[in-house]
Image (cartoon, rainbow, N blue to C red; front, side):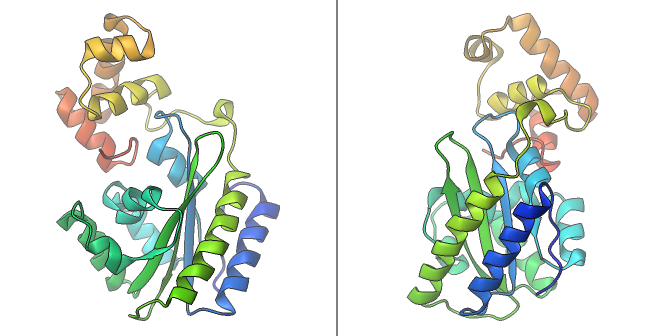
Length: 239
């Protein structure tokens, strides 16, 4: 098994590695990735990137991060819909699967990653752990493979959730405050300043202030472009 790229508690990272090693004993999975997304909209993809643990090849992880693929990654979008492992081909057959999602799979293929499964683990506090296992071989996974991936994916998800820092330990991303990211996330959901004012219980002036600051930090002139740029940079979740 390749060296895992982990963040957070080393002990918990070792638990994740050990669990994946056990899964490898009975399956053909070579790689894993797991990340944590909190229930708070301010942390979305930024938190996922900060908490991600993986043993994917360094060349692929570097490309994935530098090109912002997390913003259109089908694993991130579709895994929260299921707590049972499903294969990539099943996801491709979903009505909401788009060309941008398939481009992520194709990019992975360019780096020698050709098949995989995905799932999520939900905690009582509303947080979600997204887990995926993959292989350099093109293959169809058996029911037994999927059952094993589900079992170990849930355990790995729990281990990952235990490594996440508290809200106070999370810094603002890209020079944008957590509150500004929260406003952008709601704007991405189609909410107006008046609606965001009510949802966040802050004045409309404050909402517009945060969004203007985010626009300046992102180097754009409109709220729409700010949302697009924030998604591209992995600062908020795609909607």
